[in-house]
Length: 101
Image (cartoon, rainbow, N blue to C red; front, side, top):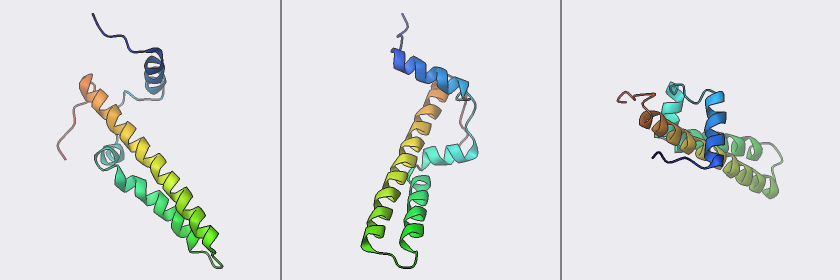
């Protein structure tokens, strides 16, 4: 008897299929899944640099840059981890077979 996933998981997979989640991953998606910290750190550091490097920067600006940069990096990191899980699901279901790096 197959295990039926709970309703939220079924709903997530339905939305994922609708948005193209059963397509093979692109080159950048494979990179992000292998090294989730690299694409996560870049936007956070860029945001921090833009906020902290402006003329007349005060301590509050630096703190805001750190806080929002960290939140942005965390968002990208979680997205990369979810992409890794999606790729594992594609392999498990036989939709995609990865090539060695």
